Every structure is written in structure tokens, then in C-alpha cells.
Length: 395
Ligand code: NAD
Image 1 (cartoon, rainbow, N blue to C red):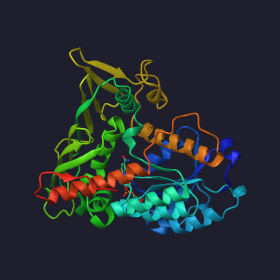
Image 2 (image 1 turned 90 degrees about the vertical axis):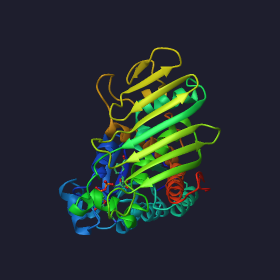
Image 3 (image 1 turned 45 degrees about the vertical axis):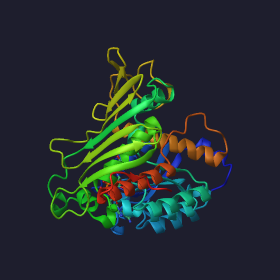
Image 4 (image 1 turned 45 degrees about the horizontal axis):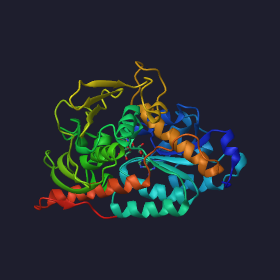
């Protein structure tokens, strides 16, 4: 790929995908999200851990050319890197495999000269995350991490409220992400998403802490900028025989004095994806709930509660830029992913063409991934320790 390649600003950005084959969950969401704004096209992939299944899926279900529906990610990186410009090689890879494959795949594609969009948690250890950060910094490639919830307009509005001082000093944050889908040993029934998420070799040492806890920690950091100083964690595995945590309650001390409570659970009966965050400043508080994401409740101290609505004129510009439909026509999960893809595509155009982007490059990156892995390792360490406070891992 040529540097200062102005041609990239006259065409779609070309995506390849690793993972997301037949029956996979998030790969199909990524494909819809990436393509929704007409900025990105899917040109190739290695979609399945079983090479033949992946090749067939790409050709028969995604209508890709047979030559570009690859059996393995290694073959894909090698062949795409060797394609001449005229044959339209991909610009970036989207990694939507289980966690243990994120690092080797990201490394392979970065070193072959491609930009990367990667699922969370970024790697399966802090050590891998630090290596990946070095590779990203050395290659100068764009690396976007899909912490989906940062893509919601009302989350961006909350961030702008904090940045603009509308909440005053943030004293306390409560974030929770309860689910109930692992209340039985679904992993023993052949349910694929449960099977790898409860296998430490594929998921990493954490279960719920990695799968949904990293989203919570990232969301707090994205909205408030608060950095964790120390944690006191009670990490639990309710289901006998399960090899990773399925529930955790964490007290958090943030640098600067704010305090937090973070709770995640995959055994909380009746809960679906009840990610909920409350941020208490000394002037006002905000509450946001991802199951009702087009609204942000604002509680100015001593005044009546206000409900801010996506799509209205009074919403901050960062949130307006992340909005596609008028108020009252709900937007949610797929659009939030779409916003991360849009920002990543803009960053790729900027990186390749050398022309400064007009729009905000607002997406989670490799540094957020490092923080996420430090969060997992600190919480797991605290869960095993009798000490009250465990300092946040240094990186
Ligand atoms: P899944 O099991 O449904 O799908 C994984 C896919 O990866 C499958 O098609 C599998 O065949 C493929 N795969 C595995 N190894 C491969 C390899 N070496 N080469 C090519 N393909 C390979 O998993 P999922 O639930 O879609 O999760 C995938 C990733 O997305 C995980 O890291 C998970 O944490 C993350 N995720 C993120 C969100 C979010 O909100 N950001 C939501 C769900 C999942």
C-alpha cells in the first residue's frame, strides 16, 4: 500500500474479516455495521476455524470471489499483501474470533502492512497487550478496538457533559452489567459461544470479568476519563465445575479521589444485557441504560430530573455526528458498532492519504486494550487475595 495514497479518498475502504463464519454471533453484526454508511466494502475473509467451512461460507453466503475466501488467516495475510493495487487488496482486517486468537491474528496483519479493527478483550494477557501496543506503535497502523458502548450517541453526549464541566467534579460511578445466560452449564450442551467463553485456553483466565467487565471499565473511562488506582474484588464462580468466573463485585478507587462500584454477572436471573451506568458529579448526575439507549437521564442537583433525547438539537456535536436517524426512530447496537467503523475508516483514510480528517477520530484504541487487560489481571489478582486493596497493574 502506497503512502500518501490520495486515491483512497475516492473509493470505499476495503475490509477483510477473520472469524464470523456460519453460526457465529458478532461477525454478522460487524459486517452490517461496517457496511451501513457506504464507506467500507467486504472484499475477503477467513471466516471459520475449519478452513473448508470458512471458504464455503465466504463464497456461498457472502458472495465473495472463491480466490479471496481463504482457508486460514495466514494465507489471507500473505495473499492480500502480495496483490497488486489494481486487484484491490484489502486495507484492513476485522478480527471477530474468540479472544485467544486476537493477538496472533492482529500481529500477523499489522506486520503484513494492514490496519486492524479488533474485538475485545484485546488479548488474553497484559503481556500480549503490551507487545501488541509496541507493534501498533512501530507499524503506525490504525488499531480500533470494538468497545461497542462508546459508539452510542447518548454515551458520547454524557462524555461531552463531563468534559464541559456540566456534572462538576465526578465523585462516584456505579456501573453494572448483569446477564443470566450462563445460569446453567450451557457450555456442556454444545452452545458454541458459551463453550469458548468458559474455556480459559480460548477466553483467557477471566470469564465475566473479561467478557463484560472490560466493557464496564472502558465505559467509565470513556465517559469520565477516570483512571483506576486500586480495586477490591469479590470474584465468583457459581456453577460447579465451571473454569472461569461468572460473577464479580468490585469496589474501585479512582485516581483523584472518585470511588466506584462495578458489578458483572452472567448468572443474574432475568437479566439480558442490562448494562447500566450512573455517574454522580457535584453539580449533576447522569444515568444511561443500554437497553433504553436513546435517552440519558440528567439529575441537576436540587432541580427536577431531565430526559435528554438522541436526535434533538440540544445534543452535543460529538453525539450528533454519531446519529443517523431523527429522534424517536430508535438506534442501538448495530449503529454503535457502525460509529466505531466509521471513525476507523476515517482514520485509515487519514493515515494512508496524509490528508487531515474533518471528522472526530473517536474510537477505542490499543491503549484502551492495554487498560482492559490490566483491569482483568488486577481484578483477578484482587479476587484471589485477602488484602483489601490491590493496586492497579502498572503497564
Ligand atoms: P463465536 O464463537 O460466535 O464466533 C467466533 C467465530 O470465529 C467462529 O466463526 C469461528 O469459526 C471463528 N474462528 C475461530 N478461530 C478462527 C481462526 N483461527 N480463523 C478464522 N476463524 C476463526 O464468537 P462471538 O460471540 O462472535 O465472539 C467473537 C469475539 O467477539 C470475542 O472476542 C468476543 O469477546 C467478542 N464480542 C464482542 C461483543 C461486543 O459487544 N463488542 C459482543 C459479542 C462478542
